[in-house]
Length: 343
Image (tube, rainbow, N blue to C red; front, side):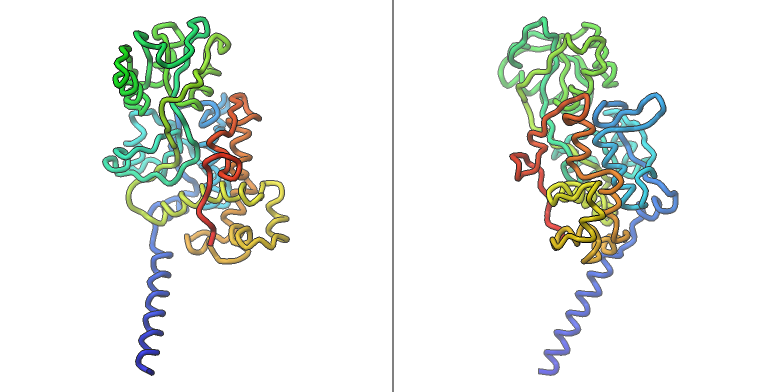
């Protein structure tokens, strides 16, 4: 019996030791970020609502807010981010080369990208769906009405392949013209060289703002695909992937738990909800498990806000895009957003 007790104790100690070693495994990316004092974040070249720089070089948008949240969690300061604009074609090389620590730029999660590009997707921060923008005077009511039309699209995008597949499967002929630069595709459509331009609903809402006369264009309500999007990291460095994934989860969980940028301090001091207490660093030492301070989530919520706060000011009803939450609402409110528990 003594031997069995000793063996059990040794096994328990070994498991605890192994778990501790895994939690504290070195992270080259985290070490580099802390040494340089900022996060390098790859974003879109300029998409209102998601990642867009004003005349002063100040970046705003849903994807930008995620990068700021990451900086608040890792460095305690949401301003410690440098943004690198990336095109559809160059984004993968920029990430794989180590020029940026992650991509946060309306990038669709697909099987082939995950399997062949050496990248991992760390969750979904926007449920997108592809459709088309057309001129109002064209009186296009449905996607099928675009038969024999000319469609502009960014080369190498998921929208390029999806549009080709959709029309071919229905024996409808269209002419798809791709452009190496997304802005060139949009400009070609705006100048009348194409009958339609295709992208995600959110992206189209952002791009429509930049047209010479937005009122002359309508975004079709018919959706031809489901395109979940989220932050992307390189293969390897599991602890960095852990941080990237759970910062996104923290944004979503905070909204679900009723924790906002305005009440976060009060919630930390007074909440008796076990998950809130773990999220805000009162119990559990969750930050230490990732190599961060235990107020990592409190910092990002206080400085940037929860997911709902970010959504509303960047793409929601408090923004020029006026996008309803739809699929991007919490699952308890008819949407698809949820997060694993903080346990």
